[in-house]
Image (cartoon, rainbow, N blue to C red; front, side, top):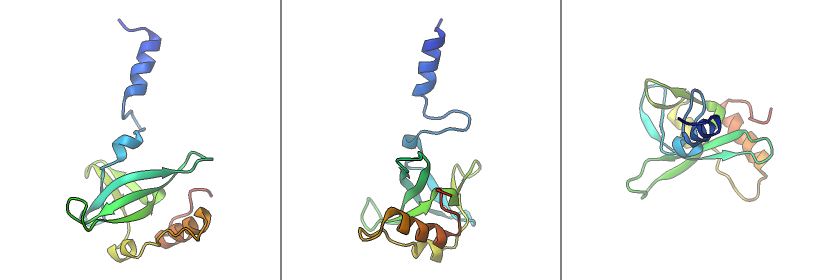
Length: 127
C-alpha cells in the first residue's frame, strides 16, 4: 500500500492527467486544419520565461525523414485540442499558415510575437 507522499510522487510522473499534459507528450502531436487534413506535428512548445505561459508551438510541416521539412510557429491560443482527431486543430487557411511571419534576430520577441499573433488573428498570450 502506498503512502500519500508516494501517491503524489506517482502522479507527478504521469505525462497526462485530467486536463494537463507534459510538454514531452505534446511533442509529436498532429496538427489538423478545419477540413481534417493533417498539416504536420508539434516539434516543440515555447514557454514565456517570466509568465510561464505557452507562447507558441513550433510545427514541422511536410518533408520526408526531416528533409524538406519546414518549421512554422503557431500561437498556442490558435490551437484547440480535438479529442476525435487526437490532435490539435487550427482554424486557419493553408495560405495563412504558409505565410506565417518568420522570426529574425533583428526583432525582439515581443515585436515578432505581435506580428505572429496578428497574422493568426488571435490575441497575444501576454494580454
